[in-house]
Image (cartoon, rainbow, N blue to C red; front, side):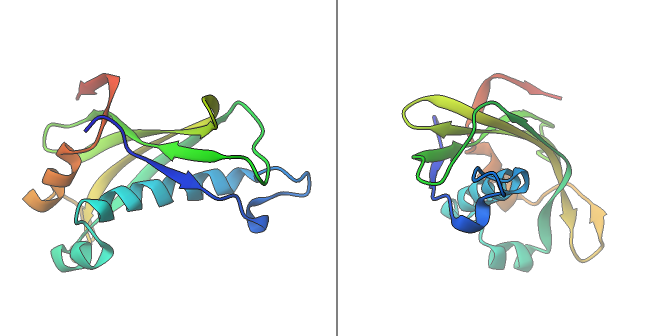
Length: 144
């Protein structure tokens, strides 16, 4: 896959007292993008519950470059930056782009899959691997 992105509507509740997007909303935008990707490729929350697997994050980092305000035309993308070959651990980068091409923020998340029944990290089943194989990769993507 070459690119995956979602439009973001900045809501009043996303703003801080300075009338720009509050820091924690950026992480919500990233989660929205990742879950949208999973759902678009058949990995709904119901499917994850049935498989007894879910994604977990070890680290989230945001680098803020440009202010985002209500009314900005905004979209977010995602791309895999590194992964184990079995997709048991991975890193995803999101870019929040103000139309037409201003990078407002870069989010990076490091995560893994957890068996929700055993409550332990585990190698994902084939259904999850097939979805991750479709995820766009950064130009500097590496297997770890």
